[in-house]
Image (cartoon, rainbow, N blue to C red; front, side, top):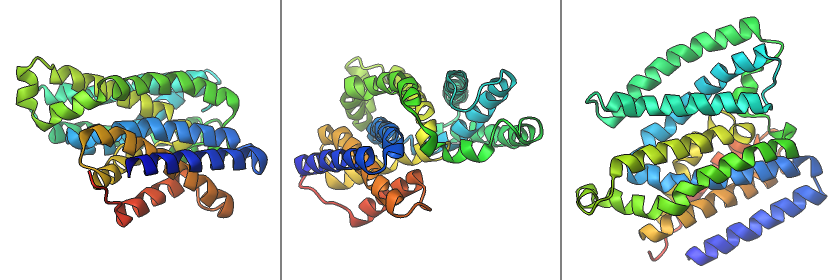
Length: 293
C-alpha cells in the first residue's frame, strides 16, 4: 500500500504541475512552492506525533504569526515588502528564538506542554500589540491578512529560489536522523542507554521545524504550517504502524494534498489553496486508509 500511495502522490503532483504550467501558468510557481513546503513540513509530522510535540507543532501558528509581525516592522522600516529576503531572514531568526524559548522554559522544570503554553501565552500578548502597531504605523506597507493567509498567487520564481535553500536545509534532519528519532521516541530510556542524545535530537528537530515553517510562509501563511506538522503524520499512522514507513508516507500525503488542493482552487477560486490542502488532509484522515503495516 505504501508503494501505491507514493506512486499516486507522484502522479497527482506531476498532473498538477503540468496543468498549472499549460492551463494556469500564473499558478505554476505558487504550486511549486506549495508542494515543496508541504513535502518538507509533512516529513516532520511523524516526529511531532511520536515525541508528543503536537502541541508545540500547533503552536507554530502562533510562533509564525508573532515572528512574521516582528519581522514585518524592521522590514517595512527599511522599505522591504513581505516577499523580500530581508523579511524572510527576520522571520526565520524570530521563529528559531521563539521555539527555543519553549526548550528554555522546559529546562526550568516545567513539562513540555506547560512550557509551550507559557511561551504561547506570551506570544499571544505580543501578537495583539504587534498587530495594532503594524496597522497603526505600517498599514500602507504590510497587510496583516497577507501574513495570515500567505501571498500564494503572487509567488514568483525569485520567491521559490529564496525558499529552496531553507527547505533543503530543513529536509536534512528528517532524511538523516528521522528514523532514529522515531525509534528513540518508542523507548527513550533505552535510546539514552545506547548513547543516543535524545535532548540533542529534540534541539535539532525544533531547529529544523522552525526553518521549514518559516520557509513555508509565502505559500501557506502563518497558520497552515501547523496543520502540515500534525495531519500528514496522523494520516500516515492510520496507514501503517511500521516506523520506517511513517516519514515517506507522511511526505507523500503532504504532496498528494497539495496537488489536489491545486485542482480544487482552480475549480473553486474562493477556496484558498492552503485551506483546500487542510480539507484534503481532513478527508484523508476521515477515510482512514488502512494498510497492512
